[in-house]
Length: 446
Ligand code: F0G
Image 1 (cartoon, rainbow, N blue to C red):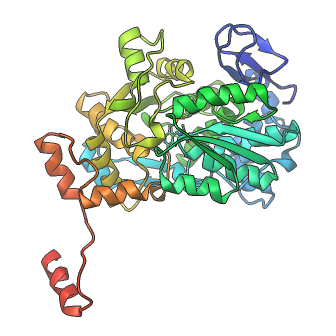
Image 2 (image 1 turned 60 degrees about the vertical axis):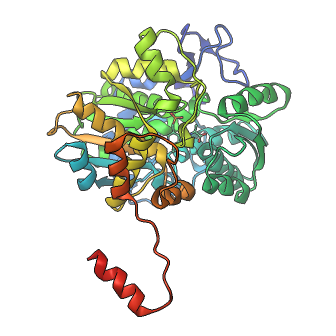
Image 3 (image 1 turned 45 degrees about the horizontal axis):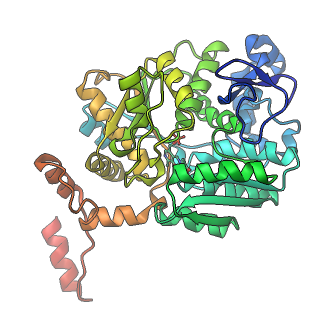
């Protein structure tokens, strides 16, 4: 931490000098956030020249921090003392793609996706991990830990390995995608599969960090949020600072939507963008804590749910960052929406047909966009960006089952959706090893 940034409680506003192991306010137990004094006056930040020009110039540099799509924006991240010692895998720098088929299906004239699944470990978590793990190393920790639905753990394990640190992963047994579990093992994490869901893993970890000197890397760690907010900055730079009308993100523990919102608000404060886009958050129907919280309490009180969804990344019933997310929704006039398992599966297949692909949780964005268009919140000629959070290869079992037709077995998705589901299924064809056989199939498909 540098003298330009301080940690402030989002509830009571108290500045924290001594940090608790669980990153909660020592006064009222609410979450903390990094508050940068320099943002009060952009001139302080621009002593090195125009920020936008400086960030573009760094793109030609080969210094490790400049090759990172997070640390390239380091003026917005005054959280480490030594920029040349950050732990980086060249995260960020993720592409924006046009999704013409998905746009047609959503009923909009054009649609963009920022694919955070193209990060080094295949999810947006890397942008936050480089930040928080760099802080952990600077503070001299040997062990880091997280509870995870799979992506945070994959990312943490990789960054800890790069830093020569040890990592402890707590994941729900049987409820994370194989690709993610495999990553955690490959990067050498001590991986514990608990007989619990994500929320249960969080509870256990909460006790462990008080009984062992281990650094918590869940998104309650405010440095994670700092790293993740740079995705919004990178997005605006890629759009040549022309603000889109809508950004749509999936919501689980709600760190990501909070981070994107923080990035957007800071950019407005600094005059980097002129106005805010609306930031919408989409959840799975079976893990809809934020939807219920907003609809039933006006965002005043968290309604926890017993989470169940095949989009295992967002199978979370007690989201830690719900208050931060509510604030972002209020500041950006964002909507919160929920989508069914069939709607997610169809949207995922459509993004695949655009040649992009993503994991199920990411596809909730397109499914949600369809609803926002139908409700009139998003107009066909408005500019919308979906945040795709994870790579298609994270969860091959889901994709395979979908195409085989067994994914939604036993579920009643309704006639219309069932027809749509079938239209997107492409099961592999098993044939005798003869050219005639292949030609027969080829002809019947042309
Ligand atoms: N998409 C993917 C692919 C995720 O892995 C997650 C969260 C989310 C969306 C939701 O983001 O929690 O910031 O609202 N995955 C966490 C994990 C919880 O442990 O990997 P969020």
